[in-house]
Image 1 (tube, one colour):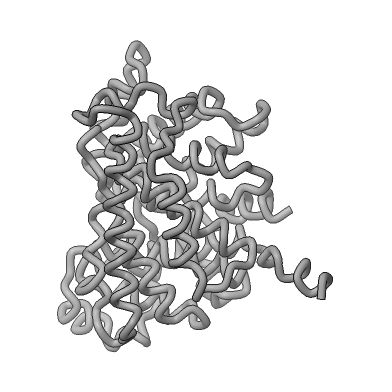
Image 2: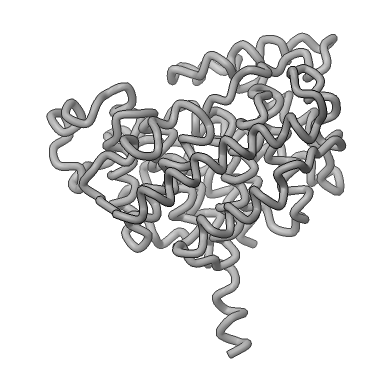
Length: 344
């Protein structure tokens, strides 16, 4: 019995599967973003038959995921992962992404404004963050932090919130990014899909008033909340409300209905996570169908599908994805390089 548990503790090639899944979901949902479901069906046919576009271009979701992954790798090459050690590489990677000629995939307004401020080396990152933004850019890119092995719970939470905070400073953006990284980590470690929402809810309650000062510094003082605990609790409460809506939706699961109708359109962080979880949990053993369902939604299809792919890949590993799809996804070599590092 012990041997069986040990063998199932870590999903085989989970990091590679999660990163490839994220990019595949991004590429599948990129052409359908801003379309309602009838328009998507008219363009792509029945959702269960949607094919990966040719060429399989991704959006800023995958580009920024790679930026976070490279930043974490750089920071950990220098020693123990800490807030001060991660901040510089994140800043450098975000600025490089914002200035890249390949940053032509309709990047998010919040990210671009914050990166412009981050590029002014005279300013601390707290002057760059958009404290009122809880856009899904906070958690569409956080998957690497859920995949890196060997982190403590505090390191994972702090890093997930910090990578959000450099651009999206709203407490809900921080909490949703933390929850997304936690979900991916749990799936890598062998959590069963039917356990996931309950474990995320418990994690949210346990961390509801925990402010990671060593990672976030004085971020909370930019908001009107009376204390750091009140600041972060506001974000966790909004995420808990989103998980409540998800629980209600899963009580009567319907893969044929647009998930955004019940868990939100995904433009904001807590809804992106809830709708991605919705798609994944509707079809936990059918990863390609889960991606297609996520891409055929009325909301932020590429971000919802990207997070869905990260979840499904963390659960099922690299073999979850069709070889023909995985071999032609954009940035394949970069995704495989990071995946191999963390799978090792």
